[in-house]
Image 1 (cartoon, rainbow, N blue to C red):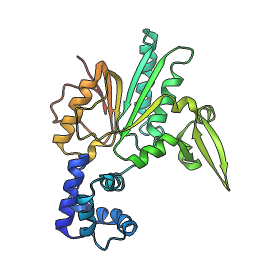
Image 2: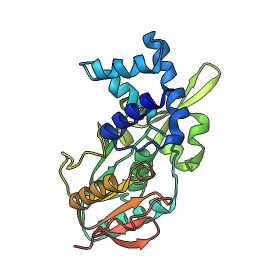
Image 3: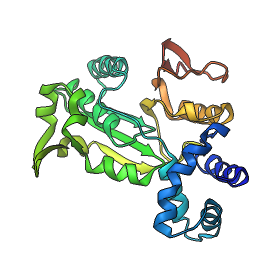
Length: 268
């Protein structure tokens, strides 16, 4: 890929998603858009760049961001966060809280929001509560997969067997099996496309907990700062932010207080 074309493409990515692509990503970008070249019957990367820039519908831009976005996730990933969430839900429920709002900011293919839903349900048993989980992602394709809630058998290996049988239906298809999230789980979750690089965000708080994990590693500090400040705005006092264990808020000058690695609280 021509360096000039790559520079224009990564500028488009940054301006529309906040993802910062280094020079080392030129091969990755080239490989990921080759399928779009074949589909559109375009001869070169430069032709594809021009196609994006002249597409009045904006649909190809969304498809471009879909193929560039990295979606790596699994059920109960970084499990300590779900242990913290379980203890918080139990505590707040014991104090009489009956409404819970959680935001999963980088929902990917749905494993994280469904894990959130299972964790909440398991810790409010016998209590009449209202639970709402907002799940957002920049990729429309991955959100559609998440909303369907259908997973291959090997994908659900991380779900404890008693939760798998309680919250998923086993579906046979051909020689293999799939598992579909129950209506109970899916009914708790609302999926929306959202660009985390463009706060202030339109949803209303306050949220009790925000999971924004393993996405800020793709952002520069300017984008991180805007994102974290708006999460702070949307959290209730005493609300929690969970980030990926490879991430940190150090140096961003936020008002969050660290509770333990990758767990922060809004104190006021």
